[in-house]
Length: 144
Image (cartoon, rainbow, N blue to C red; front, side, top):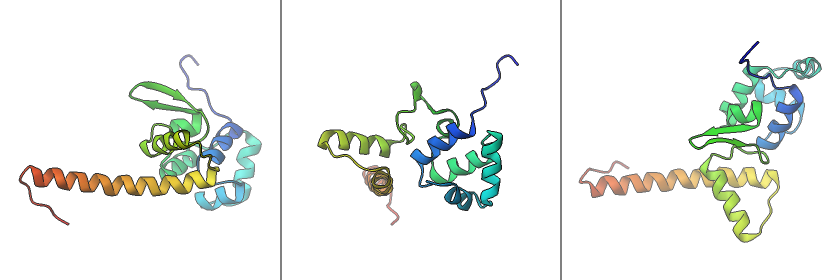
C-alpha cells in the first residue's frame, strides 16, 4: 500500500527496549507488561511487537514511541536517529551525555539509568524553585 508505515520487527523493537529501559530479558518484559512470558515468546515467533506493548513501555519509562518502534526521535528540528539507547531529545539525557563527554567518565546502561532518575528529579526541583522565584519577582505570592 502506498504511503504505509513500515512495521518494525519484534527483534528491532526488542533491541531498542533492552538499551533504553530497565528491562533486560523477556521475563522482566512480561512483568512490566503484566502478561505471561509465553505471550512474548509467541510475539517473537510471529516477528511482530504488539503496538499496545510499545505504548505501555513508552508511557511507563517515558521513552519516545517513535524511538521504540522505529529508532528515531521526532523533535522540533526534525528526526534524530537512534544513537545508542535513550530518547535523545530528553534534556536529562543530553545533560548526562554532555557531562560524560566533558569528564571522560563512561557509565554502564544501569548506571546511566540511575543517573537519569537523579537528574530528572534535580531538574524538576530546580524548575520549581525558578518558577517560584519568578512568581515572587512578579509580585505574586508563593505557595510552598
